[in-house]
Amino acid sequence: MPPASRQTDDSALPTASRAVLRRLEWRVQHAVSTALAGNYRSVFRGKGMEFDQVVKYQWGDDLRDIDWNVTARLGEPYRKKFVEERELSLIFVFEDTPALQFGSGERSKRDVLMELAGLLMLLGSLNRDRIGLFYCAPGESWFQRPQAGRKATLRTAARLLGQPAPALDGAAEAEIPWRMIRRSATSGSVILWFGAFLPADLPPGWRVLQQRCRTIGVRADDAWDLALPRNTRLSAYDPVAGRVVNLDTGSHATQAAHARWKTWREVWFEKLFPAADARMKVDSDGDTLQTLVRHFQQQRPAGRRA
Image 1 (cartoon, rainbow, N blue to C red):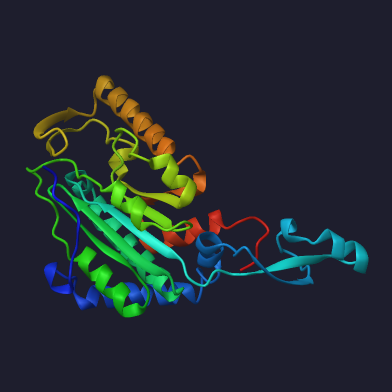
Image 2: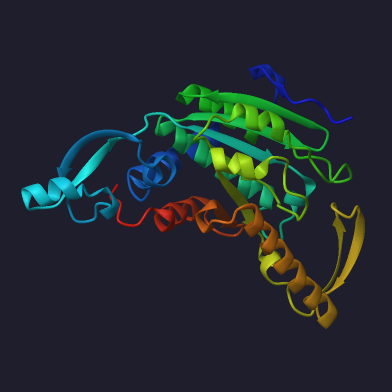
């Protein structure tokens, strides 16, 4: 029987060191004052639906907001201004499976996704959003309800960053409580799902959830995910298969099998998140914060000013 999800108190889970959180918070604050300024709000928060007033159109404003009646009457372009939603719920779903512990370089996929989740939590807190977390690992899951404020966000981030990695010789899959997530996510929430995204069945009620909330998949890509090293023989433990595998990367069959797996994995990720701006990928060897900056800059709605 799968374990029940539970909401825990502060003492129930290990916490990350204060030094790690301070470093992440400093990086986020520095980025907000430079490269991330305005981009987060444009991409995640968007505009509210409540009309505020009509203002003069300026170069770079969204053409879709032009009020053509006022423009025709006054002889120059005017646009509608909306009251921006002041508070947003960001619900993090961290699927912590043994597959994330692979890393051909200095950091594993898990290390990268943990850091990225911490950065996004702190960034959301700076923008006065409520931060919630579903942590799911083989044999356990727990839930921290969405809360606003720096202290609450730091506690949530500490719980996640201090969580020990699942055992490699244990179960390979985590059960995500999608029914509970659907109940907890209010309409308009942003759900960020961190995981390995190995092909499987669609989560129950997934398309309905996507109609109510914005869903974003966050994946870490190791260099070996993109291309195997050439002419190398190695043995490695596969936690998904639960056995040691021998690889000869100089074999055409091995390279062809990897190419098929790579396509299979990409197709599944796109099936889960059909919109390009709903898929966030981070290179395990790259700068996590810079990846975040690039994502927001690339996905910023066309014609919208910060």
